[in-house]
Amino acid sequence: MNMSRHYIRFLSVSLSALLLFPLTGCWSSHEIEEQSLGVGVAYDKGKESMIEKEFDEQGEGYAKKNLITSTYQLITPQVASSTTKQGGPQQKSYVNMSETGDSPHQMIRELSLRSDTPFAGYHMKVIVISEALARSYSLEKLVDQNLRDNDFRPSCLVLISKGRASDTLESITAGEIPAFHLYGMIDNTYRTTRILPPMSLIKLESKIQSGSSFLLQNVLSANGEIKFAGAAIIKGKTQKMIGFLNEEDIDGLTWITGKGKGGLVKTFDKKTGQLIVYEIESMKSRIEPHVKGNNISFDVHIESEGRLSENWVSSGNPSKNQFLQKVEKTSEKKVKHLAKNVVEKMQKNYKVDVAGFGNRLRIKKPRVWMRVKDNWDQTFSEVPINYHVKLTIKDYGASASKT
Image (cartoon, rainbow, N blue to C red):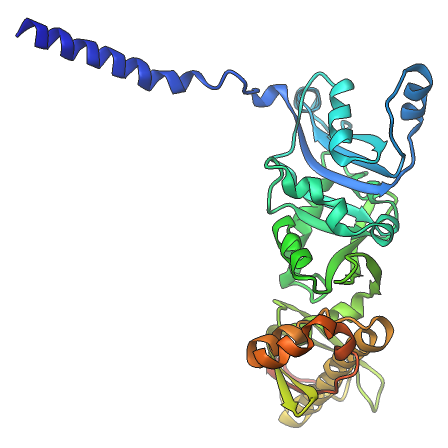
């Protein structure tokens, strides 16, 4: 009996010790206040900074080619501490560090030779790639290390910059962290049709593996401020950038895909030349493929409900059906123009399908798709497309009538 009690007591003590052991933490872990948290990275054509040049002159260096400059946006313990203690209005909330070389992974490790805190990438928000780099190297190569690194978040956004990508990670606004600012701007899709659905790192990998052409949101920078403006076209076969779509092109693309959550259609009255604005409350689109023999064609059906949000026509009475019908027709014509214009660019200028026509053909006509998929971009450039647009004004705001 005594032996049983001693045995039970021994088991209890042992079990308690085992349960407490995980609470002590991993011997190889690093406390968060001992790390430099990477929140953004920009990739540019290789150009060594003055600091790097001085280090090269003084040190032995290592074998490398200056192909890529990686700029890492970091939140370090020192920055966090100084910002908190000093109130922060004049203090930057981030530090940008650049390394130039030929291996993104090696460049990250070089940061360890310049900082007393290890780099941690599990809070990474954005990857910005410059136009110059995206035209020279395939995206598959540029983001290969990011895709393989378990520390990088799959939800990390990928953007293209028309200028130097590192400029998009600078801000003149006190307390602002540019990487967070870029990440948050994607949420404005309910206000405009000019922001693409976010392209996360995991979605980018899927696009790369599929071999299809696609778009990446373009971001501009000027005097410490940034703006989303158009998109970069990535050709599926090469995974390299081949051109840009402008802001109005993205308007048309959003109408074709039906993925918009809000925005405006600006038109002008044919008789008076005065401004009229239709505000989108909802939209939907259907791409319908047709196959007759070897001939492929598409019908694009677009529908939307919205409100008359601005009317400069002095003689236009929003409460009268005749005037509203006139506005609807004018707005429909503008939407049709936007859609046709962007498709013409895709078909004639770039010979790529970045609007999902091929995907609809794959779903609706899988046998036909298997026959044309290997050369779809070229085939798409020659197919006829018809547009059917129906806009309905449900509301004309608080100001009802004009005399």
